[in-house]
Length: 275
Image (cartoon, rainbow, N blue to C red; front, side):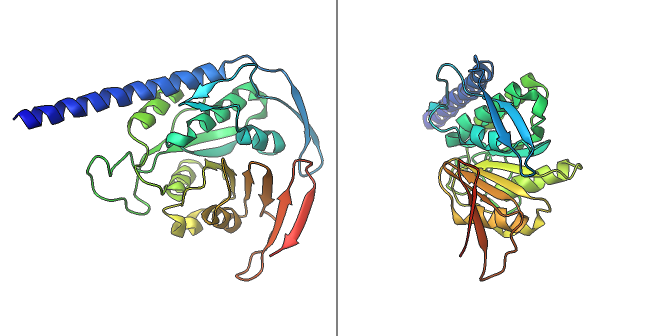
């Protein structure tokens, strides 16, 4: 009985800490979204050569979300600024611990540039709500779960869902269910619009399901490029952005032995080569 009581107290204590963490992250995202803007205006040309102007989402002071300084890596801002042609996108975000600062960038850019209509929907996934830690059965490809559909048009609903997804866990292992989350977003959305996936370079648990995705996926990687994300972007005719680079697969014909890859540099010049 004493051991059972200790275990119950430990579970309740952990639950309290977890719930506090979720609300903390939600509050930090709210503060970041509402932070004072630098007011800088960025001029950029889309693929058709048309000039667009976007407001920089940079803040005048540093902000932290989940212990990560959002000013150290602005790859999400950079990608959205560079692609004004991205309209009404279905944004899918890896919502495990290392990624909290990046969903902050999504929300802030969307808030600062409301007229650009970046998002049609947003989906968060945490790879199964810590099923392994909770002692539940293993993760099944295509049915791992931990997928959330916050309302990006209602900030209170959005932040409530953000907190819940944090509290429910961060996956518990290195692989993520990126493709399952994109397929879920595809089933929810009838517009036919493209996807933007924001993730890190961890392996994709369900990359074998990639052919179920029927629209381009534009991947924003917050660290380095890894093979699963090349497969995802190339197979769907999308693209990959990472800190310092960009690869566009939309006009590439891929075969088993011959792939043309185009690197998009900060100057927005296209340098193509064959692998």
